Figure 1 (cartoon, rainbow, N blue to C red):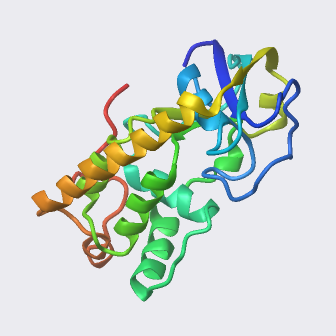
Figure 2: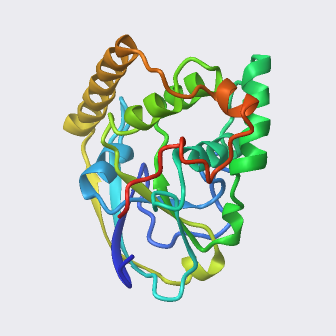
Amino acid sequence: MKDSLVIFHGSKDIVERPLFGVGRRHNDFGLGFYCTEDEELAKEWAVSSSKDGYMNAYVLDARYLNVLHLSDSQYTILNWIAVLVKHRLFPLDSPNARRAEEYLSKHFGINVNAYDLIVGYRADDSYFDYAYAFLNNAITVEQLVLAMRLGKLGEQIVLKSEAAFSQIRFLESKRVSREPYYQKRVERNEQASRRYQALLEEGSDGLFIQDIIRGGIQNDDPRIPRNQVR
């Protein structure tokens, strides 16, 4: 990671001074300030179907921050899923999903609160659906890896600690019109959904979560696809 990053936060408000300890606890990586290095994606996140928003820009000095990069090759997609199910409100409405959550938390979980900064996938609605399908034994881990690339949402950067919040400096805000950015988000999700359905039609001989649990498979198992080397 570069020492200095320009990052963007999409919001309904102008946020000149992000505050530590403020926000929703049930976001992907828990309480934190969620940003991206992609200005266009931040604009998509800023708007809703009925309201405009703001793209807030910042400089982050990351030189002395302890960073967890969930896309690095030492981690797998299952580390991301384990973190997600711990923080997001998943409908664990089947015995299989509950067993999956327990197993992933035990063998693939990471304490994100031990880090200043988290970098990883953003779980929008479509990504959330893929994770839910995996927990319910509907898709394999190989299909999950492919599905996570469909929406092309890139990565989000999340400030977690007081140290991280102390290293961010506001640059500017830009008003974002809901048109065309809300439509861009809708089209991105619809395209990802179509590709996902095609992916399901292809089938897979890979590992389902039930296979992972029964086999006692853990994070160092070569059958779990590794993240690509950055």
